[in-house]
Length: 340
Image (cartoon, rainbow, N blue to C red; front, side, top):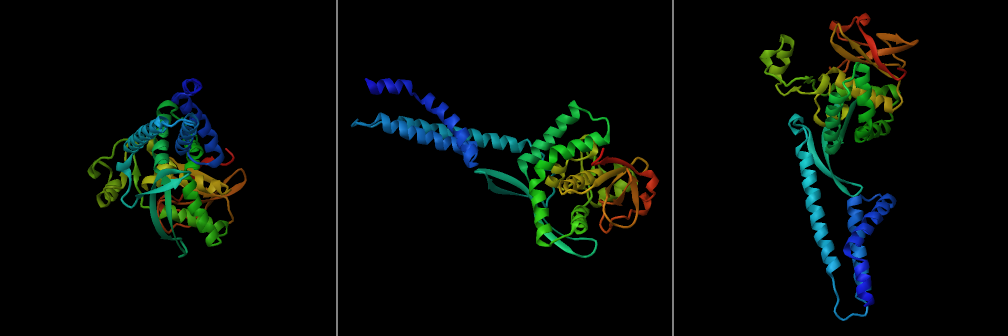
């Protein structure tokens, strides 16, 4: 009678509830994902309760263990279906060919990375190489959040939009930041050399147009755009709010225009403590970087500080130099600095 009483009070639903609560603490203490923590707690509790209820009985029951196996299968199927749905709702059609997918284990979970192997030279001939990755779930999530933001918030200024990207995306760039920091440490780069490495890393990525509307055939655009798209039809990504990609999206598909690049570099260099700025020109329809650092060449002053300009869309442009067709500094204005 005592056994039956205990069995009734401590049914399998109670085991599930205790497993959920226990796995929350177990996950927090060990760093193991909640999914795996729950399975560990579930089987451990089922085994302990079965052992207690079967004590002194000749015929042993294993139904709680059986229930746990069934629950495990159901959870696995649901989790797999969720992951697959999450991945199929991504933006894989936009990803460049050189980006490949790889699986890693992170805190007990299997994570899909969007990775690309890069090898490039800075503007003084120094070579760099590394693997740069973002999590596919971060890539999809940040792009979905950006789409929602553009519909619900509708930012009124470029400053507001750029700041949104930098604030929301920088945490998802942690793997990119780690790869760049590894190069910095291994090659013992000083602040100027590190900035040069980061900017040339971006300059080395082929230019792509980023349009608010869907990409059209090359013949529908003006001659300057036609020329590029006829040589590189895939150098276009469309249906992107405001014609600028978020930084995580840029690193996931390697398609970026001028302000896609300046916002990404701003996020990276700001993380490392640089006094960086973004300058735009309505006259030139272009965006460049500004860096307050000991240098020479063309600069623009803001609040008494010199920000040396930096072109990010083409190779071979060093700090303080601009292409001849956009080099009138009077046509440039500050959009974002760390002080505004």
